[in-house]
Length: 244
Image 1 (cartoon, helix red, strand yellow):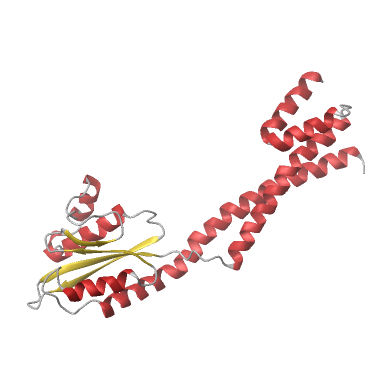
Image 2 (spheres, one colour):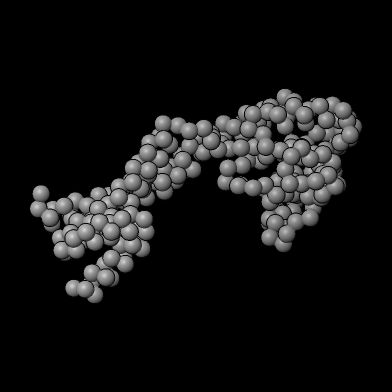
């Protein structure tokens, strides 16, 4: 095969590898986030919401109610649930199963930006229970990590007289972390692309150096670029330009 064809083949392999690597990793992750997570998010929200409705007692006297504690124990071990908070009518966290919050923290302590979210709601629509629900949801989102893969639900449990006894806030996973065939395909494309890209540069350097008459030094340059990759290729091109 003519030397210029070999050089062209090595260059094409490196460029194709780079494109495959970018497509495999960036496009694959974008597809996973935008398609897969959207597909499971609403289903999980409905499932967790239904489980809350079935598990939480119809009414309790207070946050210290044994029925509520038993329900929280069941909820925290339910599929997809990350953590559970129980908040009293004053906004104080009475029970925190996992998560960054601690008992005694208050969901009314918000940053200026988060306070603007509450103030944006039309006042006539903001009764005390609605405001507390909103503040709990904001606190769950603020304290939670990776909000792009977490969802949040809030439920009110009344006292026997119908007044709010507690609010129960739940953070749950909305992203499906189990690998699927399409995910594996994107990873394979990315890995193969990375391999082609990484090997394409030293091969091009080796053939170009041999074509330039560098003899055994061509192999040293090829090995150097294999290790240093793009930085090594740049160094080779600079040296070749000065020697030429």
